[in-house]
Length: 81
Image (cartoon, rainbow, N blue to C red; front, side):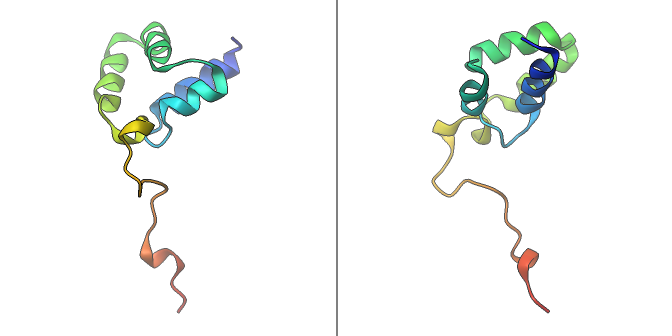
């Protein structure tokens, strides 16, 4: 694995809205492989913080997402004055 791939996988793992399935599709690493990679790469405190952050987070697991999950939308974003 190249350094740039490793960096991108770590970045995707930290992103709230990037599900583990997307990482698997792009890089062939399932959730448990990503967890192992993060454990090996991050310092112990950062790893614990990351695990606490992603455990049970619906946006990190496609199977837990509701039908209406998707990109955040602000109603004021497209208002015309």
